[in-house]
Length: 275
Image 1 (cartoon, rainbow, N blue to C red):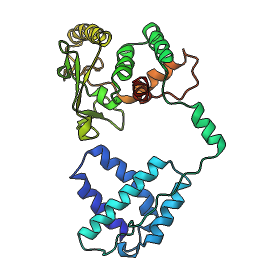
Image 2: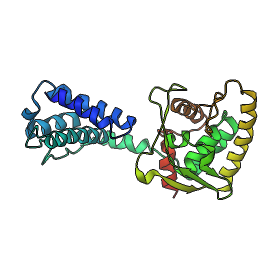
Image 3: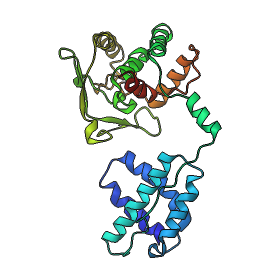
Image 4: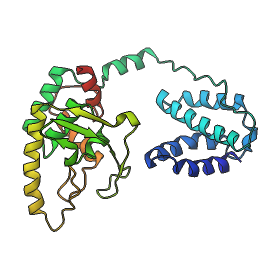
């Protein structure tokens, strides 16, 4: 059946890629199994495949539909490689268009996902005044480097060169359940994600101040501090969880007058916009 083979493919896929990618494929796969799980895989036709994606397109975003289609395509290609089917039902597939209403377009326009320069300056100024531990360094680094949140939380002091004023990105943090010690350090999102970034004197100064404070914290917390060299570490030594960064951001946004939908990833868009 399609379900049996899809689960076999998922097990194979798990040996080829990161756990975060497997999780994304597993979530997308549910939408295909719910439609054809009981059918022999050879019975899934081009018409059935196109109709299912068209149906899902009415409910979900373009990015999510892309993920579902990519998953389906990989499964059927794998079935062809194993001679289980002769024809791929994803061949000649046409991605359905997303038709937005005027209201949806206006809402999307209102909810801009980045900060303008004056808005960023104001936000960082408020963060300097009202922020809690690590807040200023976190959001200043995200905004002035454009790195992803997972890349930020995986940073170690060995990635930072104070003399050359560079930050080396070689890994990312993965922790879907937001448990302090339930994380994994994975390879970056893509090969091109491995990069070295120049940083300015303002960030260098913030990092130096934080390193000084962290050394004092490690001495104070010596019996329980697990020192793995993480820059953005809590008082137990493990990296800060993503959920806490999001909650801290929501707290700080209350001090501003922005009505934009700002998330930690918005600082990556902000960085691109400012460039």
